Length: 209
Image (cartoon, rainbow, N blue to C red; front, side):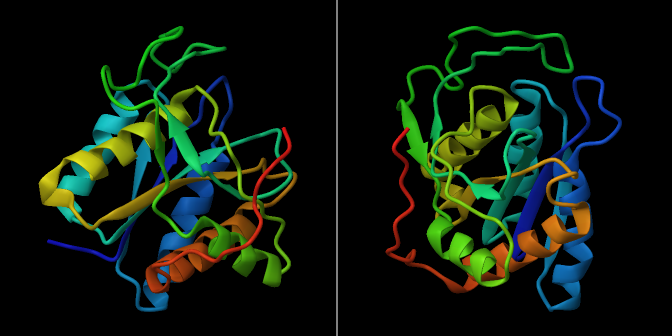
């Protein structure tokens, strides 16, 4: 079996009733299917290791052309595709299983960082043209979002059966900044750009700090 795109979002955490990442993913899938994109979604637990394991299981089963993992960045004011995942777990708060790893690798012995293979600058440019706040982010943090992002990129880079699958991570802000329908439309737009763009746009997307 193979599909066009697999999206993932997260379950609620830290006492919240919902997670905007899953709401956006859940709403984006029907819109993509209506446009002829074969899309599936999986909700991940906010747990170190468990979230990435569930995503890996789905990737192996569905063999998508594209994997877009989505998480919540409550303090941000824009939709932010991530540039690089780092091989580090350092939890400020416990995950939903009560784990609080400090200064541990995501994958022991693996490289320090792994880059997104999505056309992140082209995706940001498309959202900007649509009037949606968007920017390239240089860090996915050190919590479960980064854990899933790093594990996904490591999986796609090292498992021969998955060669050619592109993947990466996108953070969405809280619903009071960008509501779920807008975030869902933005995700669908980014997926469309990623499916049709192999070489990323050469645009500035760096940061001074």
